[in-house]
Length: 281
Image (cartoon, rainbow, N blue to C red):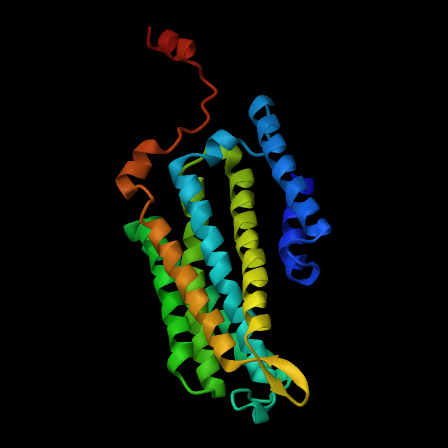
């Protein structure tokens, strides 16, 4: 698993620098395509798998993981665009020329909003189920990215955009563990949630590669250097909004709350059927 993931993520993150058709990139992709299926076959045959592919293939787990990839992809756009726009020189016409300290202060409230939304997410999950909570997250994230396309480049605007996106991420990421734990046996919750976290990381890795290509192709000349253009940043934010909506579409495939409850695995029971029969007798 480690070999396959390292090769895949290294190829994705370095493909634009090395060329997607270069020998190192193709070798890494080939190794990943061979290693990951081999690992999956081994996990199917061992009695105590690290990650049980059968559990991962369950509808609720599989759909949640796919939605996690899309949300991870969406989240990275904000992390890539906002700090750059805040620091680019004002002479570019769209940069604010701020320091790294200012960038940190502008984006800091986002983390507080995510913490606050985790409590709201838990209450909504308890009342309406985690599927609705997960679906609310991408809608809020897409709204945040939409704000970036219409608002003026001012500090408080960037804070509002970051907080809106952070609120959506808090909703979505708060619902994912609940969906995973409701669909797997108690003995597999740690492995299943770890795999879900890995899916988010895969999303951000793919986003870094794709968004990097967009910004590298859409540039403007400034002071003898090529900088990402304003349209390039807007395209990346639009991609972030689109991937959030993709996560919403995937979340629609989750089973209903009552159906998920019927399909949830029973807790591990140390009493076998013979013991139960004997007890009744």
